Length: 77
Image (cartoon, rainbow, N blue to C red; front, side, top):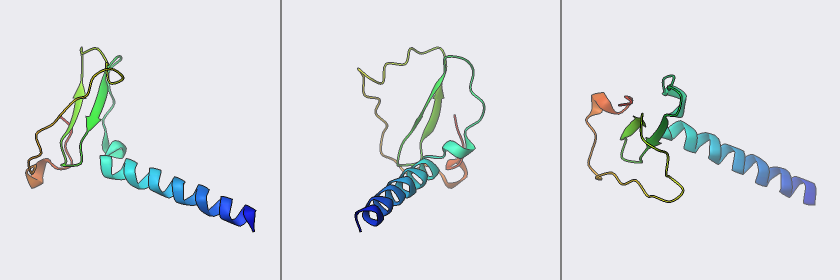
């Protein structure tokens, strides 16, 4: 019984991680140059930062919560 519960928890966590990654659009992200990193927001804004130090551990990047145009929802800028 305990093994089944553990298996369900592992599968649920794996499903959530896969869903979250898909919704963030990481599967469509283009090749990135050395030192670049990407940001993806729930409103559809996605960006690749180049020549910017990666300070996500000490800094919070914000985006304006606006509706992204339908033709830009799958684009990386």
